Length: 359
Image (cartoon, rainbow, N blue to C red; front, side, top):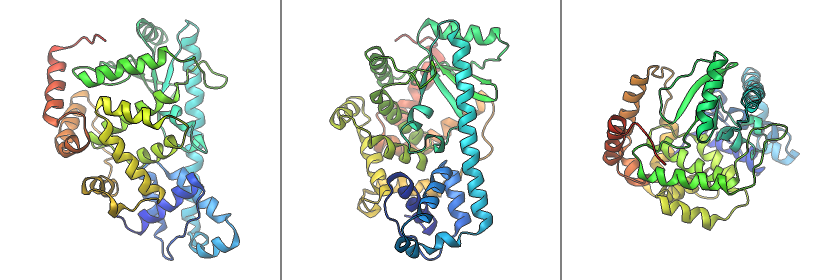
């Protein structure tokens, strides 16, 4: 599996999330641990682990003396990363509230997807990394929201049928008209309708002191599973996804219900995978006890180097995505709800011939 840096990072995450007693190796490549943490979007959370280990009982500190040996320059850089994440979280939420206030004047309420909806369950929500905002506005109000934004001279990008993209006061926003990529996908079409039914049958809740709607836990769990599976299939699966699941699965919910729903939509194999990987990160299961296909996913997390040169144009993004899907065909076979050729055929066919989506 892993090298020493990976082991240390997992120890720090366990300390931050679970408060467990952790024992670090005597030699640690701290710059590499910090690099890994930043690459996977868990730098602030890992720094929490460092601070908690540093304040542990004397006998535990003596076993983790490497904590006191972290180079000052690295510790300062890491602390700066954590503070920057807190500042980003605060700014992004302030802008999200400003957007909600703008739309709310016309009676439009936005539902927060992913990001803050998952972060609320973290020990320190501001330490879950997110650099954008995803919201969902149902039905005709989505078009009305677009008209309001354009009336305020906010340029909208209509590259993707399921959402409109724009930058609002420095924050990148995806405003969804569909929760999932439903077009040409019978499974996600059924799943989308199920997610909407959840929203229609729960007591409307808001984030504190805002008009931003807070989705129910069942919705958060199921959307996480669908979205994380999509990221795996498209080659964007990170340690942060596993950490999200660790946080979410410690909430109170009917696990049998989630298991059955995942089975109904073909997400069950991915659920088994992410549960097993969460066990490994939590330290309750050894990686060697997992099937080879699971170990391959885990090892790939630390063998992947994220590209800084992301494609800019719509066409370049689509081409890049196509080759990412081709390269991850084995993941479709092992964990997907359909085959890779079937997925690509439906995606291409629907793009060419099914412009309109009807739920």
